[in-house]
Image (cartoon, rainbow over all chains, first blue to last red; front, side, top):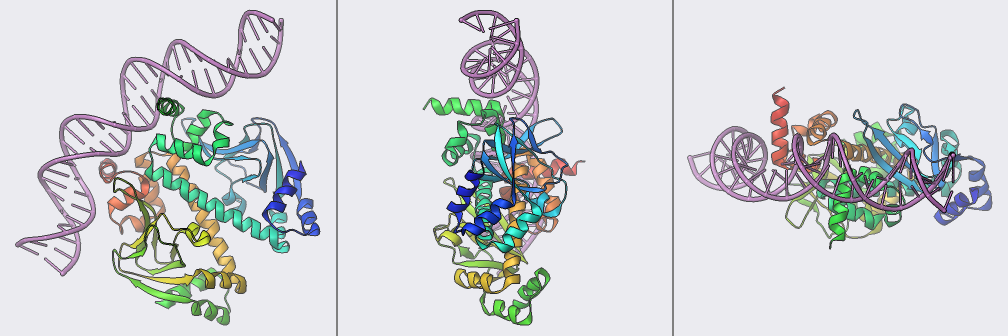
Length: 192
Length: 192
DNA sequence: CGATTCTTTGAAAACAGTCAATCTGTGTGG
DNA sequence: CCACACAGATTGACTGTTTTCAAAGAATCG
């Protein structure tokens, strides 16, 4: 639903009616079924992606076939590979839907035009980048300073909604631990 | 030396002579001796910080007294706590000099004015933020997918200059492993 | 040189990963 | 509605990696 995106814009900035329409006119809606890919390793990221419903993830697969989840995105989050989008280089990530989902796509070119022509859009995008960076820094900090159990507890605090929504094995992957370890960690926590 | 900063600006954007002077007029130079703090946990970050010479690090200290290094910054890098700078909240990080250093400070207010009034400056800052985010993403990826040895080898590839410049124990901290483990990892690598 | 800081080494313990088997819950087709 | 298949979670036994603590060895600097 395009309305989810419109409402999101309105909460994030002061758009005039015309500006809103300019942004909305630039997007394409795409539906994804569970397990459907939005991007495959080796592809070039061509669009900025906003999730209006459902849940996606970005991840890599290593030589042993293990998946490593870099990010989740549910409604009102963005997901993508900025590096590929910027440079035009093939992405090393896969992105697919964990649930049936709907996403809002904005092509690279149109996105850049929006940034130039619609100041509130540009401000919003910069704010998101800022925030994404902060989130990434904090995540790095948990990796260099916390044990498996601490990382899981931090995750629960930060993303309580995600914990109940995505399979545990994927949370484990996101935390950089195995599904078995996460299972044991949870057992320990419940005991107390 | 203010010239290091000027040259940096010129390589990063097309500044007119006047714009250059506007930026330079907004900065304050500060010298730091080895081990001197630029920011202590609990302080609010008041300035944007560019390193013109030397080397700084940002880190936390946990309850057991262990240091966890989040970032290094050598000449021509920026360092700071964007979150504290933005929100005005006390920082959870410490920043100090690993070598005698010189930094360029720009107060939050002046920095914001520069972003508004000097387009090439604004573009430069956005580009840096983009790049910082990409670096952070890549670092997260190494944490969720690599062993101690692989992380060290990745570090050597990405920052060969740093490896010879900062103590090994600090590199270990940056990688989220102990100094002892890094020492053993290095021993293994040399054997081959 | 002596003091300090950093690195290396060894042995034991804690932690996390692997592999295989079992258990649980969900949804589908007969 | 039941039986079955399937995906995900848990468990056990074992292996491997990393940490911890303590001590000894380099390296650096005044």
